[in-house]
Image 1: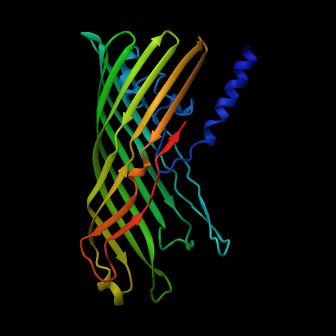
Image 2: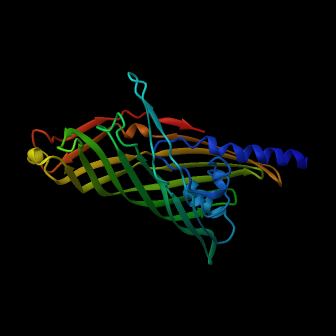
Image 3: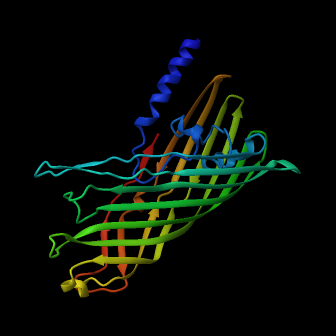
Length: 314
């Protein structure tokens, strides 16, 4: 049996690295949960339950404080359908982090309070110089930090509920070339940079119907990140500078809702199974728009269709 456990451990350690393609969603909120493929809705381990299921946080024994950072390396490639030329990204290392504190109230062990700070969305994509899509994008940096005070209450020995208010703060930086060439033969350049904020909530229910089986259901709401005072900077030849005035811009970026149903099963003292089924509301990201403070015939407000679709993730 010891050989079987060692074999299973080797397999499970090898699998997670193959499954991290997920747009700008970052499912790296718990170090232990990463080792379990991101499953944590029905399997309570530590204070990271404040993210995975606030309803189950009241079932975590004692107080818990944890923090973690996970360096990530994004790599991408694009092949031009006509020329077959391949362009690649040279994106910098990203460092999504999470920190949780979960505390038991002395007068009532059924009630717990917590504070979570984590980065559920964000990425940096930077393309190599001169790539074929440079007029659409050369660099895109998205960063969102969620701050979530949370209350969790164990109604009975088998049922717990919890909820947390989410304040989100972040930034966006988008850069691309403009098809105008200066005297040195270089293309003009646009940079949109701004801070964003939004609000939402995280709620969950945890149920332990029998000793070995646990069930969790959570809902993390959509958060509308609004940029109300961003800076638009254009580096263009002096002859067309009047057509591309620097100024402010507004934009919105919806961060999708996530509904998760989770199951946990304790087979033995040394073997646990967990499954999370996520339904992600990516359809909310249907349009990316920019409203410029100073419009000209060359600089007009833009609306770019994204047409994302809702999806399941297991």
